[in-house]
Length: 274
Image 1 (cartoon, one colour):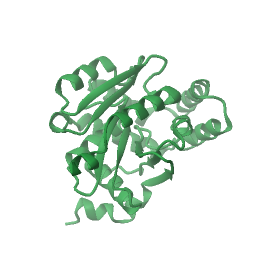
Image 2 (cartoon, rainbow, N blue to C red):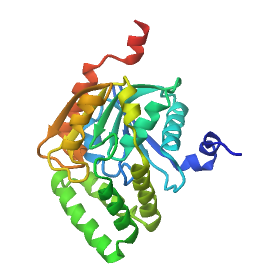
Image 3 (cartoon, rainbow, N blue to C red):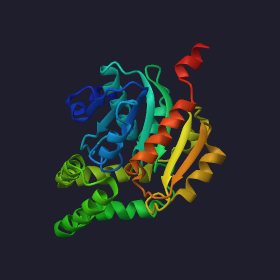
């Protein structure tokens, strides 16, 4: 029988893409939401430039990986690049990958802190995720094009009409192929099946929650109270009133807040030595 780790060491893991933007500060690892790539992270990347070493991932379009497979694949990629410690900023779906990673209690990689950007422990409205999966698999092509067109207009008004933003949005639209939509539906299925509450309760990793005021996808009133009451490593949260589910799109405010949180927590590696 072939183990999951052996599968991750096969050619499949080569589809997991990594890129590194060097900076003077600590390592910050960006994990994307259901769309699975770094195309919507342009404004945040530009804002945080030079202040951290930013590591970004684009997920493979697999229909087979579990959350643990995602976590192991990411760790292997980081270790291949001699990165063995850092903060995670987990966007939406990626919060489930981050919790799975924490639950593995790796001895090779040190997670210094976790920022849930529109993330969650157990999705508070599972029927809405089931509906999103149904729409993802069955949305007619013309309607998908119209939806993407409206989204690019909205994202341009939010993130700025710079050449970099326009190029990233074009790439985002081009990546929404049938294969990509099936992979997104699989990630939604993983959300439906996932319940990370026991891991969140037991974890001591510092956890911070970042959300927009208007977030119909993962409504913050269902998430923050649970974290405050139950999450072992919970430290703080912030709502960015001008933002939505894609809270990192409010790049200036989200970058400043994440940097403040990172500076507030000493390196766990240094703590372990003291």
